[in-house]
Image (cartoon, rainbow, N blue to C red; front, side, top):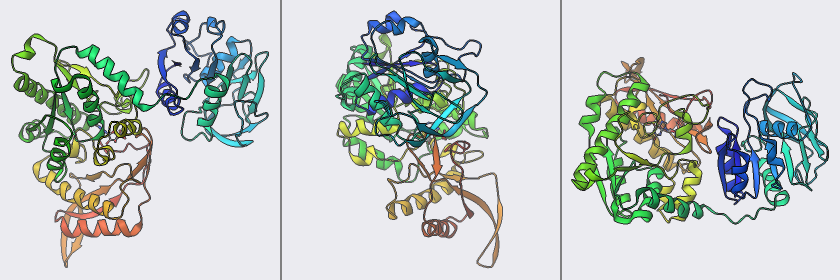
Length: 513
Ligand code: XMP
């Protein structure tokens, strides 16, 4: 067990994920947990995460020095590095030299931590203060222009740290550095696999649900499918899967989901709720309002399904709802410590206040690519595991403006063309997601067959990503874009203009709403 001490914001989960990638089991604990309690868990190592930019900031989280009295190896990153330096007798100074983003680092001495890492490489930084003197007994390993002490280690005591963020993708050799600490300095054994997550969750779910029953909200995507498969392992046929067709699915999607899922799950209850959802969305333009309404209607539909499936049996016991919520959904909905609400994901921030269900969310700490690995381990079919992400609110948040049946039909046709051409080009696996967005409240003038048209634009939004937390616009081949554009403007009467979104995330998000 490796404990990741969370000093705030979005870093800790990403670190935990990188530790898992090194095949070592990890858990996150808040920095407020008493050190005695941390040590009582018997960790093989402790990782201190990043956090606020200065140890001098008012209310900056601190650490009990007792952590260093046990003989547990410790790795500090960014803020955790500074806290560690300060606690062990080094010096942290507000040098005024701030470093944000990509920063070149010079390796002075490789030691154990930086073994095999190039002498000059780029890392991701985000800090104000700097460590200006390493604590006694430590070897200085690296520095940057603004940070004299950017990495150090004391292998004999099992301590090491870096000023940068080895956990982010933009840091070169970050995973290697983390593995040097875990395996070579702390002596952890790389024996943990994704399959352990399944066993662990199955145990937890049995404990949570007991002899009760649960329904699972299947969306057709990989997250809810994996969540359902895990819960099915835990409670067998006391799980009922419900798929809600809210009228905002893509062309042919409901039929596809039905046939895919009936092959894997014992029970699948398909609910046709198009009228209900579209009625509730009438006259609504605001994205957050749409999301909240959709989140609420989902829950109402599940409540009705629960009553229908379980009847009186559910009166006496708690009703459980299984959702495939992932960590990024939680963060974006403002659920991480100290994070702000970017958009209310329908299954997190969009839940109604009077929720009657107790939630079961076995994937809440995972990222999508990890969920895919779990899905493969569980033997789910590749079409299910590798399906591109599609948001729960469906096309409803890809129509900019009010959602109507007519607009949905237009978008469905354009979307089907884009998807078919992407598949024909063999690019499905290279592209993370390919939303098509209808600018329903915008019209532009065009000319077709010698006549004037006054139609709607659609936006193609192909992106590449690792985990949807950040994304880049995908450089699709021009001839593919041309084919999609020509087909959409020829075949979808109301669309006379096709554009491509070339914004990364940040500053954009993947979806337009
Ligand atoms: P954004 O647009 O925030 O999206 O960059 C990140 C990922 O999340 C998906 N997404 C959602 N998924 N319910 C979902 O199940 C939602 O409310 C929701 N909003 C966005 C989006 O498609 C992308 O994969």
